[in-house]
Image (tube, rainbow, N blue to C red):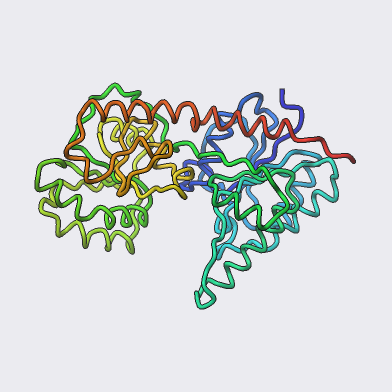
Length: 363
């Protein structure tokens, strides 16, 4: 039984489209234990008609309102899902650390847990985003300093947080799939069905990376259907269409746009291959890669990897020749790895344990 209230600070919850909001909501849904003391404080909850007993309050970016809500919660545990742009247009929510620090001063036994979903990297001085990046790094440093526990989703993020703060032994947890598996592999995989799934920039980047491969697969019959799934965007869709229009068989490319999780699950359960640009640095925060693994859809990469779960992928040049038995082995191994390491219940259990094992602060 969870004895302390858990306040979850997040962005826009489903059905609104937001990766971090969806993550925080699904984590709550699969939480290990009682969730009656959970309460959400979100940036935007407009148009939300979701039936739920969970209390959800909107603070926008009114930091005074957020501070008041935290003070009302008192000596609670707070789980902040952080990415700079989630709380500020340019990625610099400068008032957020102050609000959290003042709340903890008011309530010394309160505990702050921050899941850093994104972190600023290093930019050259001449970059137009250089000073914004410096600002975001400063905010991350201040947030990590006031936090009792920080969690993140890549080893590169772990190294950054260790440089910016005094935290060590930082938990690195792979993110689960945002697409619930509703088909449960009842469909027969079609070897010549391929999927590109994700946000507009990611789809364009993937099509660019696999451009010559897709052309070759169309010509030799390896690919008969290519499904593009994800929300539209004028800027990057124009770039994608410039490639698609020059394919040998452009008519076999199907643009599905934004689909429901159930519809996406159906496509992933049918397709044999899914193209991905995930690598050693990014795989653990790729919800699309996790969706492929969960659905037994074998990921296609440009290079060979030895680390799990990327080792369950197949390289683009081996797609035409790989045997069906080996494909099945990779599909089964990827699905087993996902269910053991990155399933929502696994992740929720790990985070719940991390919070429950935090030492209680003295008043």
